[in-house]
Image (cartoon, rainbow, N blue to C red; front, side, top):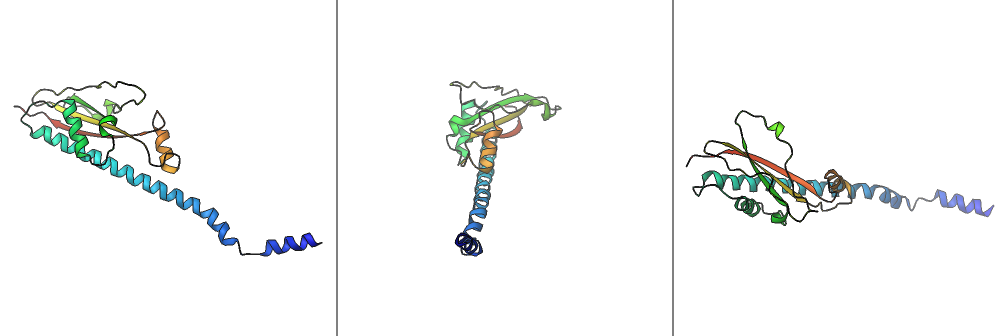
Length: 178
């Protein structure tokens, strides 16, 4: 009889209800905050990669030095992309000569660095002749800030090696005659 009385008293109390609500709602808010932060950083990194690529290709277009090298353009992109950490180790470029009347849908995916391999050769790097349409693609690998939660977990799973995510950017220009 006494056990029923104590059980009834325990179940009728309401002094712990705020704790229960907090325990149920707090993880949801933390996941939303972490996903928002991850998405914001993803957008910021992508914007900076696009900015770096645009500034590097602008230098190529107005340059009178001649055909730029792979390393020169890569260094320029890394210098102009202010927040991309270890850019020189995680960035890969390719430059393709494109016929002017071809669609860009059939050129495939951008080539990224394989972190498991020691050497990662250039996929294709052709500067082209005067008047050629040149396509430049860039791939940058990065690790999510929160790889085990929310959006960071989904981003890391989306890429083949499972621990990083690839950002790609693409631009085109016409090789000017000298």
